[in-house]
Image (cartoon, rainbow, N blue to C red; front, top):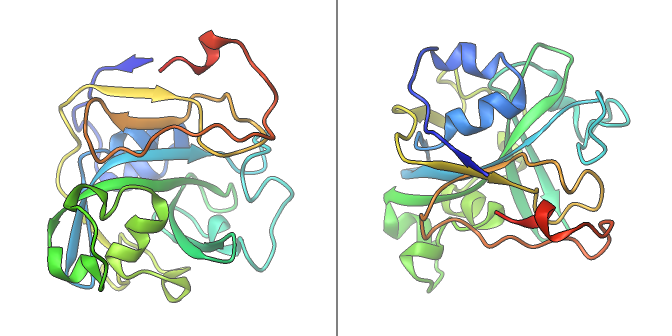
Length: 211
């Protein structure tokens, strides 16, 4: 599905106070910085809280793991995935609603040497996918619960949203709520990660998968 890139009628505080499916595309093109590395966001994915989104970590309520999702707009929710890597989310919506936007991919525009962190990978792939993005930025569980709006945490965000065309499609790798078109990306950007449907997701027709 295609989208027109949005302008910036609201400031970031207002954007993150809104629903995740509106906050997510408004983050594309903005730059996040941590530990000397800046990444321009090219792909994100929205998740609602307890309100009818079975793919959300908050779907069954608050736990010690997901508590940061309930802390209000701009809070980072950082979790360990498959026992191997970290993923970074920005919480949005009112305190207690637990919706969030997963940072899925981006382009490293500053701090290339720091972003490599000993890896030998093409520049395009340094932050291509949520695990690589978190690693490039040097973020782990210690960033969980910090807020990127107050300037006191390790991650900050700056810059306007993209003016390039935005597309949306099914979320990647989730077994429930897989066909909700809440993955958003900058059309044609090579740093966007490939779509991978979970083998556990219910079968759907070709139209639901077309991007």
